[in-house]
Image (cartoon, helix red, strand yellow):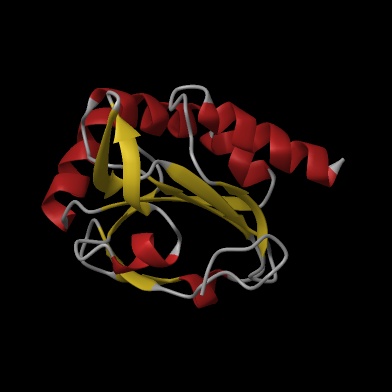
Length: 157
């Protein structure tokens, strides 16, 4: 099942930084931003996480939950959250099955070479569980959280 705007978002259940399970189907009734990133505590990923952290109150005002997803395990996520005071949940996709389902894992260009890995991308799932917007490739991690917020604000005006 590919991710298509206007269609139901692929369901998933993943462990969070505490080992608890988070299921997309349980989050109906609110907007959910699922952003996929390569690795905790690396320069681009940290800028993106800090960007979402800085806008956390704005997202909450818009009934929007932010979830970060990477192949890292619970211990790595917990350390990353503590180091940067990240207020939202980070999910573990160690086998990359959810990332693959969402088109966030596969072939990409890195420093001019083709490689296989995590594709930085974001999916906005609306209150009914449908894909409202899919940013398939995020070029500037630091600027992206603001663009996501602006998209949600524009939709609610």
